[in-house]
Image (cartoon, rainbow, N blue to C red; front, side):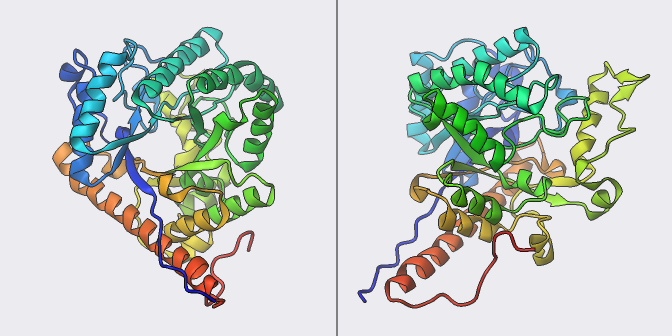
Length: 413
């Protein structure tokens, strides 16, 4: 058998700009909104990131969810109080060229199936502005949630998806854009007892939603931006998820990644199980949801009693936790992606999302070495996985030489 060259393929490493929300002070960026993007491109270069995922959100003065009610505050690095036009695009693209840092996609994470028609329309109108900005910047994808009408059942939400979300995908298609869905279940998004407030939370729902999309001619617009932290929250492991998608013929659905982990607290699971804290959270007062946004944030105890977000590289190596699906096995995550998914690896984005509470520092100089370390770790893990994959599946396989051992297996318990 002929020898095959060793040619590992690496993913494109980036960072979500919500990692430092106030890099550019409000008094500077509110009157000059694109200054925030310019300074984030420069910061990305300084921390060793090749790309930014540009965070968009309703401006704090326009948002329907107060910052005090959020677990992980969002960033409107891309300020769309005014539409993004060609002049703004030229300015941003000039900064991209000057720094050598690319834009992987734009992220706007909101509930696009909100039960209130006026609030839902406001979010949809904003999403259309995000689509327009992506098209002007030559970005081929937008990342976000589907959301949920929390006043209706899951099956009723499929009807809502068809009625309200499909039109958004048609608008994306008209602009040549893909919508990548992050699968966070968003348990603390409201003060109900619902855990799944984003209906696109796992492979089963992804497939159902994709079939609806195909029926309306927008199947190619619906893709998944996979985040392993949410799998850990729900007791899943990456390899089994990817294997399930392959088994069902949907290995093509994932085409982008958030790199954020979750560290499960075994004590919290012992107290509440994986459904999270169900009573006496503090989000209800006097028999009804508290009107105080800071109290409403206690709804997130559905999640945070069980776990803490991990910035890659900051959690200690724990083989037992990997096997119990209580933290992310980063090396196997990157290997499984190559082994089981239909990826163009060299054009796949790997976006670091910083939501580790103890390290969410709004000080550029203090946060800089933390992000440098995490991004370097992510790049090194991806490179290690790429080398292992190329050696085992290409170089050795071409010569009929088997890889040693078994490795992690899907569905094994």
